[in-house]
Structures are given as C-alpha cells and as structure tokens.
Image (tube, rainbow, N blue to C red; front, top):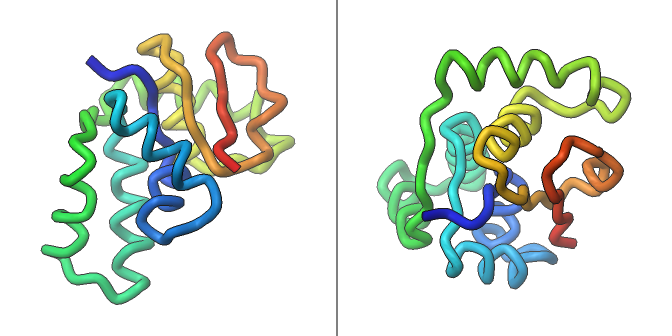
Length: 128
C-alpha cells in the first residue's frame, strides 16, 4: 500500500540529482505511487536527457512505485481542478497528480513550490 503520491517533478529530483532528491527517495522507500500521466512526463523528460527506452524503464522500476492508471473519474476530477488551480498555472499533469492524491486521500509530493498554498483537503509536501 502506498503512503504518498509522487508528482513527476518529485521523481525527477532523484533521477536528475536535484535538490529535494533525499526527501523524495525517503517517500519512495516508504511506498509511493504515481499516476500514468506523471509517468509520461518523467519518461519524456528522461528521453530529453538522452536516456534510452530501456534505461528509462529500469531507472523508474527500481523505485517500486505503484503505477495507477488515469481513468475516466480521474479525468473528470483533473478537469474540475482547473478553476481552483488556474491562478497558479498548474499543468494537466500537476492537476492529475493532485486528483489522484485526493482520490486516495494521500499526501502529494512535488518539487513545484507553487503548490504550497493549495487547500484541497490533502497534505502537499514541497520537497525543496
């Protein structure tokens, strides 16, 4: 069972050796989940760094994340978050991550400081 949800930006702190990596790594070790939309963002960013398809899969797999499909209900919830987050300029991926955290009632970890003031009924932890 997962104890938190990782945003793409949080997992990327580990994969790209950025500030906040230690806090994200600790969360992953406790058992974390990520939605497929955010997995897409991570894979795309890693590909931009020159990593091969196999390298990307191997690097992500080593964290043992629970990968949760983006389904119809998450699509609606993600869309419904747009008016609440528009002023922060949150992307579809960011809103998908938040919607997943809300569905599961789990804290969400992100490297995006803009999320800090959101009041959505779930804890939001900015890792850097």
